[in-house]
Length: 235
Image (tube, rainbow, N blue to C red; front, side, top):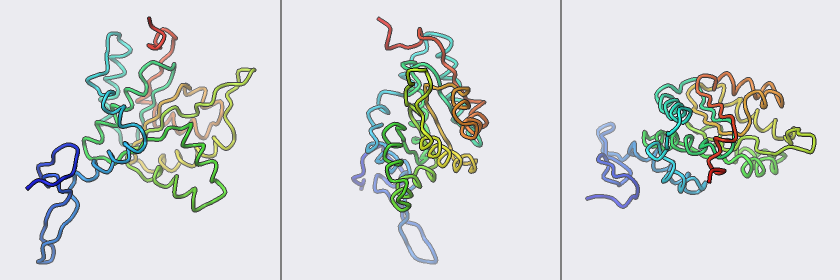
């Protein structure tokens, strides 16, 4: 008899979420392998990325131009070549960065890899607000450090002042270093970053953060330049 869990059907547990195994002569229940993916989907739903996952797939990513074909090919290669490497989609807004990064997340989740989504502008605000409360801060940032796959969307989205200087604070830099350095030190953790900043922009703000992103992401870094690639501006 099938269970009542929603999501993709699992032939192993028949949507119960657990399977029976023999351990020390006794029959015990343990989580089915599908539960990692199901828990990821639950977290994604809470994060607001669920609606994007339905639309932003590899199949739905259109590639009429060579730079889009390259973006898709690079992302799909990353799926099987991600140890000690990060995927970085940088450049102009409206160029499909979130689409391609979300498609990568969806593919990893289909493989049962635990995944979390972080929208920098809102999530960093919450983290910075509790920085002086170690327990509260740890409760928010530790899951982002520990998760197998982390997607940081709109990294350092802050705008510029009247002189054209990026409005990124010391608190933003400290938070980014705390999170990214932890993931940098564990080659088995997969990190995906989308940002309007190019690597040189990030290095200009902070070399420690920028060099870590560059080292891990240099093989899988999209650099999308030119306002003509902003699809939102097309008639």
